[in-house]
Length: 288
Image (tube, rainbow, N blue to C red; front, top):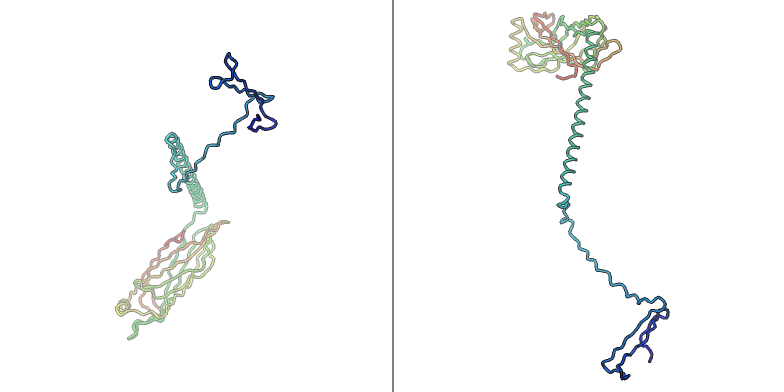
């Protein structure tokens, strides 16, 4: 009887059936044993069984907002150590930056102070002197009846004295001169632009004019009463941008402020100065 099982042609096993019987030699119907002996050909190995199915993989998707970047408990201590180390490093960087900044500022201040001391010791700068020599008034007749609007003209002679032997002064544009009475502006003008050499005294004629100045009745009466008394107080204020030059050194432009309190006997041509005083301030950084 043919073997119903099919094997590959190159690996078909050889086998034989051994029927064991009892001593009588009869074929057993139930008590005998049948043994099958297989051989796999030349190698003598049993055929390989197919590989079991690979295990199934399950992918679990978690929403992004539920993913927390928290270190596991065993790494919490390391995380604290690294965070503390990073904080110390940031603190060191900040300290080094401020230390460098402070040292730079102190170095600049020290250099500027040394240069200023050398400059003052060598050149011995002095503040210029300004004197009001005379002042005349035109078109300001407060005695005229029923007149409260005026266009006065003031002409002042100012003496500028440069006492420095090694420093010359350059008077620049954008100056401003005002004449006022009790903080009421009466006229405006400008300081002439020129160069004043060392050890020089120069007289300047400064013209200051007003236009359409309207006075209140009380202010008009007050000026008229002072004129009758022969003492009209006025203020002459000058702001003059200047530069100084000492040898090859030329400075930036800064402001010289001159303030003069002057008292005239009358507000008309041929007026005389009764009293005067002038003060000078230097604003090296144009702060008022």
